[in-house]
Image 1 (cartoon, rainbow, N blue to C red):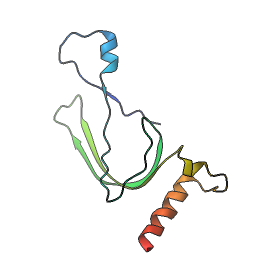
Image 2: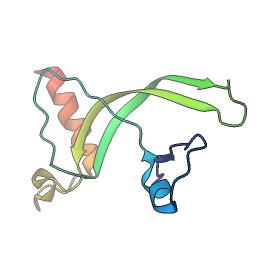
Image 3: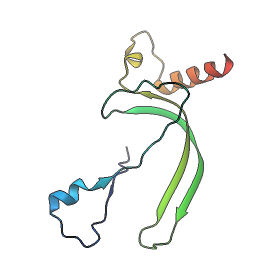
Length: 107
């Protein structure tokens, strides 16, 4: 799994090594929905189905290019959710998400 954390530059301000390690920024995933999405509290791992709809690269700073991705998230499910712990359901999480997503469109 790729760690997406990035160190935040100190811009010449003196900081201790411990402070430097804690200054890590992560990308944010915003989800807008008409329905409440059941997500666990705190940090969790999830499986998502989606597609990249836009990619951009900013090369203003040749030494540190920036990349931006717009991803359409079609479905997601926490890996350790009670729904995925059902012993009778032997589908892979991605297969289950696709089946549920497709059944919503046909209702």
